[in-house]
Amino acid sequence: MLSYRHAFHAGNHADVLKHTVLVQLLAYLTQKDKPLWFVDTHAGAAIYALDEGYAVKNAEFESGIARLWAREDLPPALTDYVAQVRALNPDGVLRRYPGSPQLALQLLRAQDRLRMFELHTTESRLLQQYFREDGPRAIAQAGDGFAGLQAVLPPPSRRGLVLIDPSYEDKGDYRQVLAALRDAQKRFRAGVYAVWYPQVQRRESRQFPEQLKQLQDKDWLHVSLTVKKPAAGGYGLHGSGLFVLNPPWLLSKALESVLPYLAKVLAQDDAAGFSLECELA
Image (cartoon, rainbow, N blue to C red; front, side, top):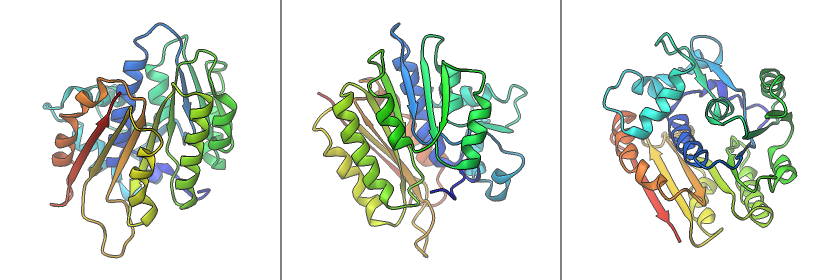
């Protein structure tokens, strides 16, 4: 996990799915006046350059956000997401991509709070420098996000959204996510929890959605987006998923038009597809 740099993957198909859902969650949850706490357990850096450095090496954004950039037929939820990326690129040229901390900063209100954790030394330093003048509204800490989550739950306002998206380079991350969610539910049952996971050729990845569903019988939403068939060598990301505990009831409806659109526009071969499952009380 300590070798993982999200800058290599910024703006790819997985970011498109994750951040589209995140923008919708933040938009829904900030409609009530009461303060909202957003907790990002694996925050990475706040902003990524797409025209230099790590992002240029693989240019994964070209098969992600870049495919949506000039489209005029975006479904409403994708329009909302792309608008947040455009806020960082006011001249209309796609040069910078917002990580989840930046998206939260753009969408949260003055009364809301942002708490971020990052274990990677370089990423955490960049994150802390970026938010150094935003405390106490936004506080970034270097350290283990799973442990940090225990320290901030429940939030004082009793309203919170938690994003959990480790790299899963260490297969132990799957177990840690499940353990962190069980603990979080004991501390803050009413919280909204969004868990990202990769679609890779690993048993833990294939079993993960069903394990997440076992955390509670109702009030969950599961979306996945596959963009290509698994690589012959068994390596690489062919899709991703997002599992939300206690989702806003309108989220499923908002994503109904998004997923088939993304499966078509972001497809890299004929194996592209999507799933949308929702169990509400």
